[in-house]
Image 1: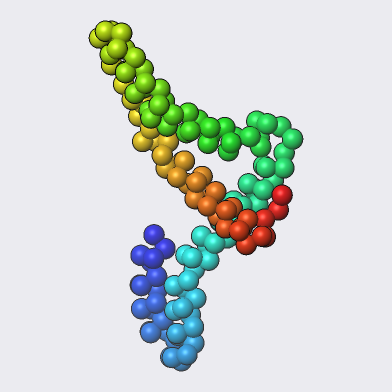
Image 2 (image 1 turned 180 degrees about the vertical axis):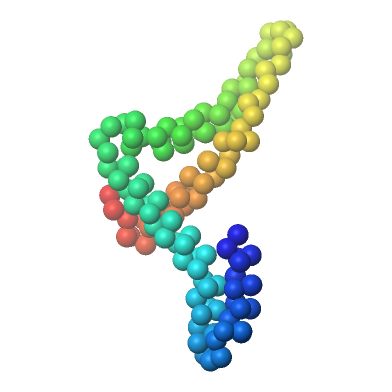
Length: 131
């Protein structure tokens, strides 16, 4: 939304600011406003995450691992237990087919967590990780 407002604002600079250098500086500052805001929001979220991880209660600090394990369990059900159960039912002559779970809502969460895990791996390989 901010990007949609930037073009009209920078076009107004031509009318009110005669100095070309000042106009270019202001246009650059206006165009980087959205990325600065996103950066600040990310920094604030990181500080909240850090404080949550320090908490002694498992219900505060353990929600991320619990979310990861829920996603892993959903993937395990779809890739191991359902195919194995269907195979056993077929061998036993039971006419039941177990359906797969719909993990389409879990995958963005899991992929996001794995992305953070990849960053942790980079920290460990560069030997800057805290233990």
